[in-house]
Amino acid sequence: MMYELSGFGYHAGMNESHQPLPEQVSTWIEQLDLEKHPEGGWYREIYRSSEQMPSEGLPARFEGERAFCTCIYFLLSGDEFSALHRIKQDELWHFYAGDGLTVHVIDKAGVYAEKKLGPRLDQGESFQQVVEAGDWFGASLSAGGYALVGCTVAPGFDFDDFEMPGREYLLGLFPQHSNVINLLTR
Image: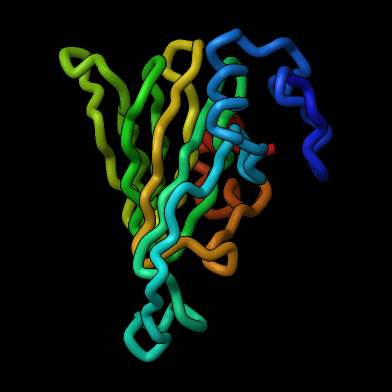
């Protein structure tokens, strides 16, 4: 099934370079009803707590109430990547299927780290990784192929908490990490 996703110009059967997606990737996109994510890759929110935390119960960095928790499916394939961004909450990544994925993190002190997610525990991958609130992060595939993961955010994700600046802004903050910034920005 091919369909145009509004605002992105991508088809469910094509990657960001407009190349055909592997059959398994197309199957995941269709069966999980994924759509293009603004940071890159494919996603669908699968859980949003019906209960809300009032703004008075949240740290000052939040404006307004938030769901207790949210969770998405997230998929990268081929040359797709998740662009560097940050949110105001901790984000827990869970590995589900496919190949390894690297979560690239620049923490609040400017220290860069790679967090490996995948099935090869003997090669330093893990089934779960955490990115702390306020850290800059993005993701790329470790060895091509694809990776289907989940991302859980608490308090729940809201696009008001999402920041994805351009390359020049991040290079101004972290010139020592120009390689990863050039790799993971558009």
